[in-house]
Image 1: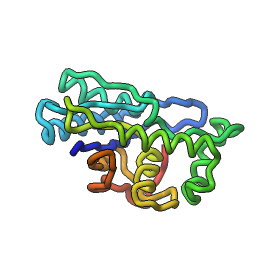
Image 2: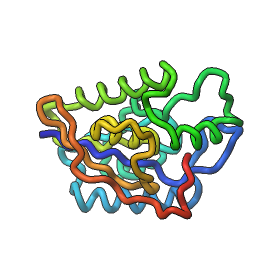
Image 3: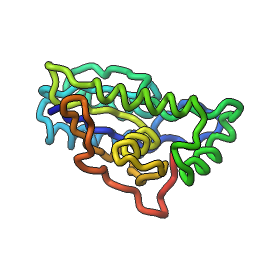
Image 4: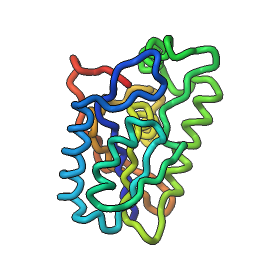
Length: 193
């Protein structure tokens, strides 16, 4: 069995003009606290592989753990945030995401369906003999897409993972299953980025 832990990035700067916002000061603190917790769970990072979305907020969340363990972070485009539909610019993305959260996966455009299928296929082929755990630093919609697929539930918003929450999956013989969902944000804090 291979453990895959999907880790939502730390708090990022809110922006409708920056396609790749960086972590806030609080987000950086969250990343360092996460690194300490991960080191207590996986001392020295032995047998653990670090994978991250290429987005700055995910990479910045991974770097304190990589620095602590003196290991590399592999950037993986398959775990980047859901792509916007064609014609939906950055200024309108937030509104589109809010609508998406109330919808279902089966109503999405082909680009989002292909993204979701690629994400699941990547995670299913993730096992390797050198590592028994993969920490995947990613995004809100990545986590919800995976949880929805594994639950066989078309509802987009499965739950609201908090910043740096860890959702654990098990990969056995090419099949994924949910072990436990990560820490959830309280309702009044449910802001997505």
